Image (cartoon, rainbow over all chains, first blue to last red; front, side):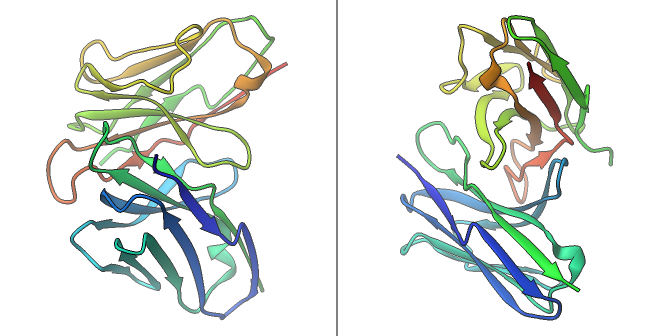
Length: 113
Length: 116
């Protein structure tokens, strides 16, 4: 059974710091992995999607990597800003068993000005 | 392009009452998902449609929850009767069946349900 874990559960950093959010999953048989941002009281905004054949994706100050064999993904945020404060969720779509997407519980990030 | 639309945004009901949520996906997206997100947790898939057929409803509490997508476009999710533990945000998402990148999910703003 696929399980997705995100560490840390919460993180507080000063503005300008580079930071890494971690996501681990138990079954490497995945179709893709997607990182989302969720602001309080809002829906999810897609940040990056990595297909199983890819190693990383970049968008602006964000870089996501994927290591299927070790069951890990990282989201790197460069030069953090107060506007980056949100909850970051990773989600894994298996390539077996009905393709049901499994989410982690998220990392709550607070960037202090 | 218009995003995923959901209504209502907020709903407060008493336990044992019924409630319905509506979702209109992005135009052309064949796959539609309903998720339940309890405070402090990640979203949990309730049901997944591909066009108007159900792909996965293994985590849908079928004794009280139902969902339909009759014409393969918009969808409704119903709870009857509601319990206190149904208090959550109900998220709708959609994705292309094929295309690059396929299955990238786009979410609506969600409906926050409070059961008292």
